[in-house]
Structure formats: C-alpha cells, structure tokens
Amino acid sequence: MPSLLSPASVAQSSAWSKNLNPLFNAAGPSVGHGDFSTSRDIGAAQQALLQRLCQPLGSGHWLQLSCGTGGASPVILERAEQLTGTDPDPSQIDQARRTHPRPRFVVSDTERLPFAACSFDNLLSIQGLSHARDLEHALHQAWTVLKPGGWMALADFATQPRHNQLVDRTKMRWIAGSLGGLRLQPVERWQGHMQHMGMQEIQVVDLTAGMAKGLNLWADALVAASRGLGQRASAQLIARSYRSLAKAGAGGPLRYVGVWGRKR
Image 1: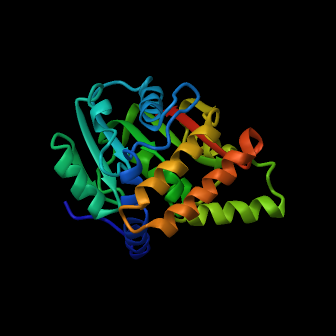
Image 2: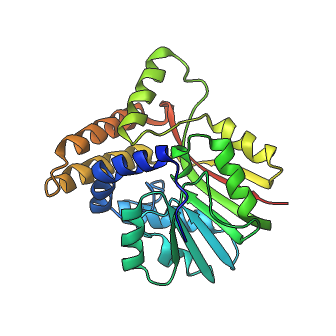
C-alpha cells in the first residue's frame, strides 16, 4: 500500500529520523515514556503504561498510530487478534517489519490515514498525536477508521492551562522544539475534541505522577546512548529539557495524560 504523506510530514519525519529516532531507540524501546508512578526503570514503566492503556480494550483488529519500531506489538498481540501499525518514518516501519513479522506496518501520516471507515475494533496511540499539525483533524481521522463501539486509548503530552505566563510559554516552545516539534495543547482541549466527536465513556487521567523520576532516567539513558551514535549535541539538548521539566515537578507546565473514549 502506498504511503500517504504530505510534504511537510516527509520533511518532519526525515529530520526526526536523522536526529532523534536512532537515539531514542538506543535508549529504550519505542513504547512511550512510560508510567513511573509504580515502576522503577524505563522498561517496566513502559510495560505498565501499555497495560494501563489497553485495559478497557477488547480483542479484534487494532490500529496503533505512530508505532515507531513496533516495540508495543508483543503486548498488544496478547489481546488483539490482528494489529496494524502506522508511522510517518519509513525507516521506523522498515525496522518494525524486520523485528515483528506478525503485525502489518504501513507508512502513514496520522492526519491522512489510508484505511476505509470503520476498519478497526480498537485504536491506540502513544505520543503520536502531539506531532499532528491539527489535533482535531487527526482525532477525527482516528474516529473515522474506528468501528462503532470501539475504544480509542491515547497517551500523550499536554499542558496545564494555568501556565500562560510568558516564561512558561517560552519554556514550552523550547522544549517542544527539542523534542521534534511537538504541538502541545491544554489537557482540556484533548477532552473537548473527544466530546465534540460524540465519544462515550470519556476518561482523562493524569499520568504525570513519577514523571520527574522518569524524565531524569530518560535524560541519563539518552546521553549514554549518544556516545555510540555521534548524537551528543541532540542528546544533551533533550536531556536539558527533561531535567528542566523534572525540576519543575508536579507543578510544572507539562502533563502526561491518558485519554480513553468509546465510539457510539
């Protein structure tokens, strides 16, 4: 199946692939930043996050947006009968296909999904939709390919609406840029989009507990991984961002949230 990528997505994907994907893959599997509220290391935190997100989702055919190298596939396939993963980076998809032969992997932008309406029983996205240029449109694309009664489970970064002072806006622009151009939005906007689509049983859960510990662990892991990749400058920039957020703690401007909803 041909990929459906806009020129902007191709450019963004290429930049991320060149500078950051190999670094993150070397530091830890591409399964998101994890749930550090109950886990003590990156791998365990990633597994905890996956288990928590997948809890209300049933079997059938799942779609994972921004699947990266397919690191979540083994856990998903404990529940799902079939799995399709998408990612805008062809190199990530190539690696996913080599590593995980059972799922189907497709190069695709989250805002231009190449699937028919009502194709999937459940949909999962971990840190994929914050890269979308238009979050509402990306969520509508996800809603369109989801079958009635199917669950959408998301984990991603968001901001706290009270952090509108100039110092916070400046900090968040810097952090978003260092992480590949995230488009951060307030937590309430994620919930509002889900409500606008008519999703039922919507839940928005703050997963930020333990974020400081997790961000410091990721900072250390990225710097260590960069030594063999020639990515020291990129790793140090991201590590600086992470440590700045960790220092801010629970009162900082960045949140990590889980969002669930079921299509009517």
